[in-house]
Image (cartoon, rainbow, N blue to C red; front, side):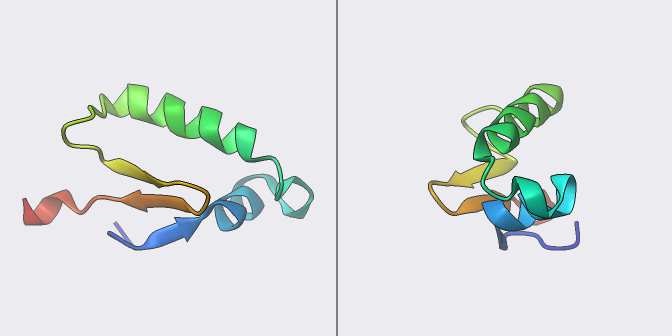
Length: 65
């Protein structure tokens, strides 16, 4: 994990994944994160991907658990 526990802004993820023209399309990102959570069996007790409302997402560093 290259940036554990660091906030990654929605606009940064959108730009890196879909390019400059999709920086305001946050619904795409919400769908992608939802699909990732399902694949990771990301439960509410120990979320691997934490949502920072209106800002972005944070990956939980599970190596320190």
